[in-house]
Length: 81
Image (cartoon, rainbow, N blue to C red):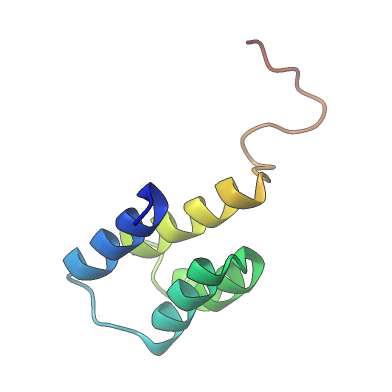
């Protein structure tokens, strides 16, 4: 089991939030590498529950795998190494 899979497993196993069907589907999409679909599944729950930490973590992992983090590094801003 690679690091990302272990992380998702731990997030799922340790979550104290009520299991949501959308969350389970989002994890399935994540494991398939369908990160954009996982984000779409999580977005409605995150809009209703903005303090839902586990959902935000999974969305963050999806964006990292998509290599798109527009809110962190806008195109006009230069990053220093």
